[in-house]
Image (cartoon, rainbow, N blue to C red; front, side):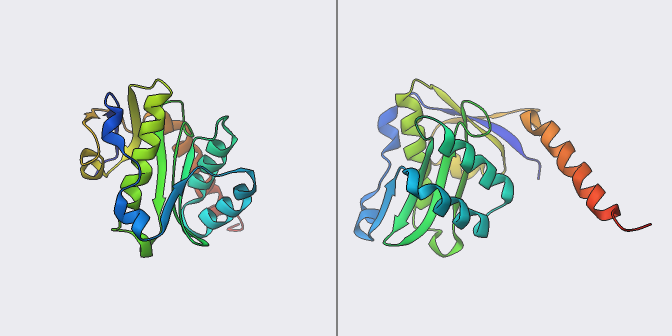
Length: 173
């Protein structure tokens, strides 16, 4: 299945109520990370998600204001969502640990970001290179952008491929 970009309509901020009551009842909170959370979030993300996502989280944490949300239950991080990390107007990455999937955390984090993007003046968000159209369609009206793969990721994908190839050939002489 090919990856492609989605254009998400952010016209109605009321559609993005970030925290459903069932998360609150389970003691799961959504919040913006603060300075002391930076190294904790990055270390946690590095142990659960691809390194490229960690780079994007780091970018979102460097934005002013921070363009990242996290989900936490007591002392446990459960998920995160970022925007304006790959490029302005882009949503993602979004990650929820396996043991917390199916609780609505990913949807709630996405809605929190979309709501905040709307408040900042965005009327559309782009979700880059996704195969999760059905997930996003449940959250907001969207348009699949034809011929959008690899889009802004083209040069990064070439670099990844070249570095991967170089690492395979090191020491083969």
